[in-house]
Amino acid sequence: MLSLKLIRDDPSILERSLRQRGQEAEPVKKLVELDKKWRHLKGEADKLKGEKNAISLTISEAKKKGGNIEPIVKKTKELSEGIATLDAKAEKLEVQMAEILLTVANIPDNSVPLGKSEADNPEVRKWGEPRKDSKSAKPHYEVAEKSLIDFERGAKVAGHRFVVLKGLAARLERSLVNFMLDLQVMNGYAEVLPPFLVNSKTMTGTGQLPKFAEELYRCRDDDLWLVPTAEVPVTNLFSGEILEESALPMKFCAYTPCFRREAGSYQKDIKGIMRQHQFDKVELVKFTLPEQSSAELETLTRNAESVLQKLELPYRVIELCTADLGFASAKTYDIEVWLPSQDKYREISSCSNCTDFQARRANIRFRRAGKMEFVHTLNGSGIAVGRTMIAIMENYQDGNGFTVPKALRDYMRCDRVDF
Image (cartoon, rainbow, N blue to C red):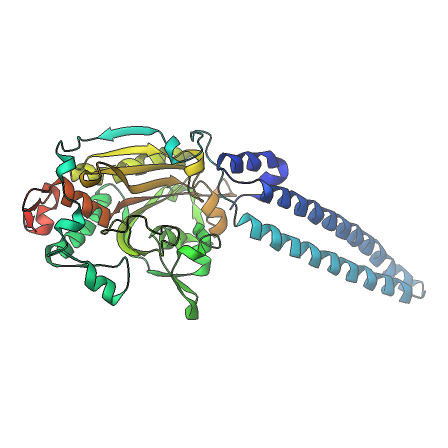
């Protein structure tokens, strides 16, 4: 959530931010209008409070002189009622402003490239060489359908975009999770296993609510939501808390299944396990000092890249332009792995610096020189497990199956998987 003070001081900053994101500036106009009314009400209330305080001082004097204090008491009561009315109106405006602020996206960092769509996302770097016979590679859903992935039974027990992994595919999924967690612990992250269900306050803290409710799965009887990413529970571990400056940065990695309705993705990646309602992911989360968050984003992104490097999977890193940034992000790098069957790179990780946007929503602060400041939060996939499995099946594919990457062989207890 953005600071209302920022909008009061210079609303053009938010107007420019919304235009860069390809959005209308209407929320800014509404906020400025409501804030103007709020300040007027508070000013009127302050006048009445001053008048009330002045009159109250005369009551004791009137009592000493034996005068009639009923008119003074009556006036004091009228002023109190007036103050209460003005305060109630101001409070309603505060609620309205807070509701608007919850729907306004973060301000892009000055270093983020301007753009109108994902087509304007510049490439930052590449790693590895795509296999030369990419066009002849079969898609994962064709080669794995019989012995490794059961699409039919997954749909039978849960519905479209659910699958059952069998045999060595199930072991590969488990091996990837353990490998990714072990690697990130070596990179200095503390492993946690958070709840897979969270409450509405937690979803609001990281920005999923109220704006993206239709993308989420909800257990309405209990006000609980299935997590769309481990970013949600892990970032909120310190909601409402005050951290010490000396404790920062703090780095966590976590595995969770992720649940997404994919409401806006009709007919996108409908074949295979590229876009599922349930998928596994290892997430990286950081809490940092404000002046360190830019550098920490670079490190976090490199940590996510290390997974693909260890697995020897070709990939590239792109920087998202202003129009393609996520709601809570001020700056984002996407990592895209090479998929031979599609003859192109596809997203497998997104690494973002959310600055103090989530910390304001979740009220996560730190103490520095006796003063309170909001921390900066960062997150990134480290990485999406199902898409990693696809990349392995296709990049390591031969006529009868695929070779297991060297980094996974101790986990898999085999060096190849036959179709």
